[in-house]
Length: 107
Image (cartoon, rainbow, N blue to C red; front, side, top):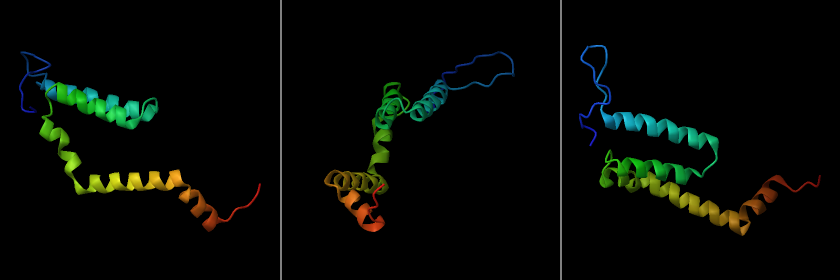
């Protein structure tokens, strides 16, 4: 509902521009999310899903709009790569490959 016309600033002069409430909410949620991501206090998935949840609960995004990005083939490819790397790390294949390519030198 990005086209709502609920203003956050109301003025009877021409000095202020009417800002939709949805735009104001996004302007607060987005920088807060970036600051939380930069602080490394919480995991990125928690922060981003929380921001997505806030946008859904507030009615700024519809569920269809919120989940549209997950249908992208690029997103599926990245997810598969994360699963593959996690498997290689857990089995020790990455450490073996690193020792094989770089050699093992004692300190």
